[in-house]
Image: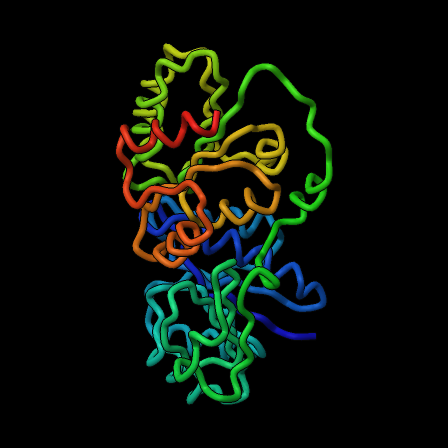
Length: 298
């Protein structure tokens, strides 16, 4: 039985996407002992790891030695790294100290890695882009074939939706929505009272108070926090207004119309892919540009 350690963090600033996709990945290692190594950052979703019945070790820092000591104490066989704060040099040090430990590194932005397996599960990912960025022996897992989709979405993939005269839209800008794009979208749509709006977020979002204050006068807007039925929610909507992050893969998987707005620099490759394939997307949010695209979708 393998001993697997996942190194990832979540917070109001980082977001929750890393942990969420890691939880999908480790489901494939059902005959292994899986442990997560995370810091206790503000707005984290470490409780989600425990709810999923995985062991959790709290780190005091993102220090190489602290992680190395944990690897040795748990006798780890496979280290999964999903962290923008861990680079090639960090990985190389871990490998030099633990030559028998295999390293699987997530990557979204074509960075240099010292790993045994490179996973870029984004639909835009291309193996050829990693030439000279990883060791020659590294196994590349790139593109739609490796996209991590939660099991709940597979149920709704071919399920027919009951049609309704009332249009339904979803607004979802990640678990933290650091720049509160959701509120900007809501303000842009405040006159659309004939449309049912579902606003999806989590407790990691520091803007929940301002969102609640805004929607209190709108009966057509429903705020959903920490939903356990995201697939069911996406299944019943007509349009999703989202960031080009993890949730967008799920929306595309369910063949839903969407408008994507970039919220972080690490989404630039997804944005390039969306533009090339003529999907509705905005590099930055503006009410005018957004409403132009919205009117063509609804």
